[in-house]
Length: 164
Image (cartoon, rainbow, N blue to C red; front, side):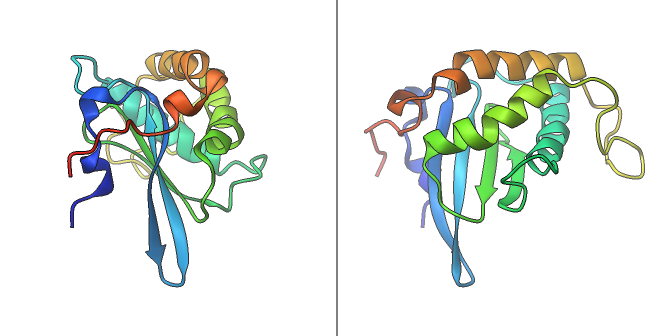
């Protein structure tokens, strides 16, 4: 079986929020979202220290006490290709709602973050020196202005092309 996201022509994929898969886990379905920050199959990539910082901050803010979705977030983690993140929720939601209601508030908090990076000590993190808060904040601000503040079908539905 081929992973569903591998069936998408990445040369036609733009930054956005896409429902990548609905997967059964036990008796429940979970949803996997492709939070694409950079256009794939291009020369642009997210910088690893910024990705690491985004991972810490997004994990923190998506589970923040103020988030009404804190109990729905199973996982947020970077894509190996350095073009975005995977978000796994314990329920299926429309990608536009995920972008507006779940991701947008978290990215706003990342863009405005001051102080220490949560979970960034030698006891809590495997690479506490691999961070770039300022770059992470710039990435978050750009993703907010370019994508999350303007979500539509154009950046929430995978292109019609299929590799199968």
